[in-house]
Length: 69
Image (cartoon, rainbow, N blue to C red; front, side, top):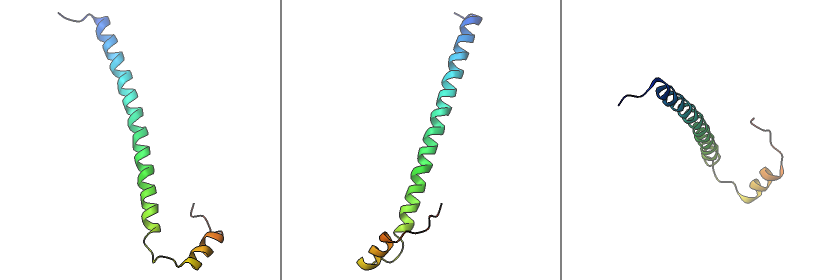
């Protein structure tokens, strides 16, 4: 049994909508993944140095620092 032209058009339209939805979801997931990767790098860089003694840690927290952004 063959599909009529109208059924083929309807299938094509559904497939195109599905593809568009999947592309949108893929973009959203890629952005979420890149945000997590950036957070991981920032946290990793923060842990690289020598641990601060409590008095230096207090100074770092209490003294406003320049933003890197």
